[in-house]
Image (cartoon, rainbow, N blue to C red; front, side, top):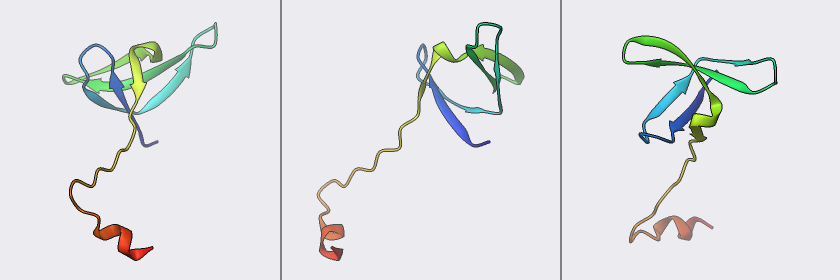
Length: 64
């Protein structure tokens, strides 16, 4: 599993090693934080979005 999420409280990125669901069906992520395995509710995280920025470099446009 290769999922990366961002903690809403501290904006740190964490890799998700496992996903489980509680009795109500809400997801919980297993992450490794400060040397410990922690299972936290997914509500504390937001998805990591890959963004590519081209600052002052339009050379990639020439390929198309």
